[in-house]
Image (cartoon, rainbow, N blue to C red):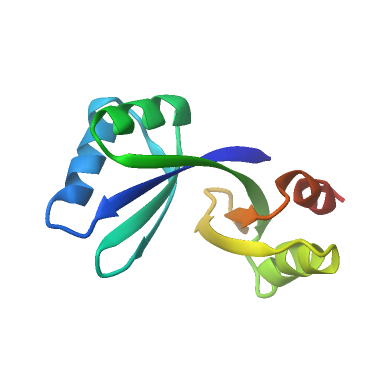
Length: 130
């Protein structure tokens, strides 16, 4: 399914990540998935939130730079080759560029969930639904 990903640009300074997380906690917003990439000067925190609209609103009010992006959230088998056979190969064969992804283990045994950023989410969703 296509979901909203909230990306927050966080200065690489002591306490900034904590401040961002406190904003989410204070507004009762849960993170369902999380990825953090950092450089010398800043980090990009990518999240799937329990309420992305509210998350964007409260983070902007707290003076964070926030961007919302459509991404795919897909279940896949938690087995060797699961990512290759159910996500990477079908998208590659359809000519869809996989820009980045992050995965997490699903509570259901043998299942994992992946969040995928691609250049054409609607087409990618159709391909992966087959």
